[in-house]
Length: 308
Image (cartoon, rainbow, N blue to C red; front, side, top):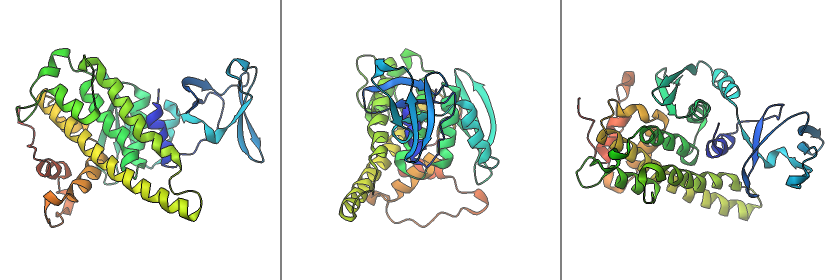
């Protein structure tokens, strides 16, 4: 199922929803985030009113709800709907294939190059692939970056968490904790909750309506959004670095496969702005020769993965 964090980011990109039978949604921020509702002729119907679309609850007194504005709920797109949006994005959709315990969605980006998005759930893989195509901000891209890290961590055996990461000073558990926060007593299981908590903190801010309201309030909100975006850029870089370090430490043959090109490009743009990066000439990208990941690794003090 599409996660709420990815769904929030997709909505923030402007993905439109017209409620229809079979659609799923949650009602956020009313202590019902974990209750998934389904639009149905019998229980929940969509009504078009002059004020906008409303979802009517038939006989659901246990939830103490009669109706709710469609704009106040969070749509969780289904696999078929996500695939339709990918197809509608031109020639973006290429394939869905199993990849060990994960699902891989291959898309074709604007440059014509193919990119692979990995997730444990096929629907989430589709959602992350679509988000990577639509996202224009760091906050919107955070679920994609987190998905790359999750794709590396999910198959890891428990013993791998004590493996030494590149540099020799930190373990895999240390690297992941540095990027996502405390992992608890058992990193092999605690990383999921830590990653969800991190994403919730950042994607919920997308619902705050940045830049809306009166002129003064709008200016303040815009300033707050700019600060939040700068912070999200830093988190994005941390997630990319952790993904690479864990992939290399645990012997993933192609660590770059877990790093979405859109995430790498955004992280590189942020790292280039660091004072420690120094003045740099714009790289020559003729014929697609520039390797954004290689430059990002260089600027963050990392080495390419060793040949195995």
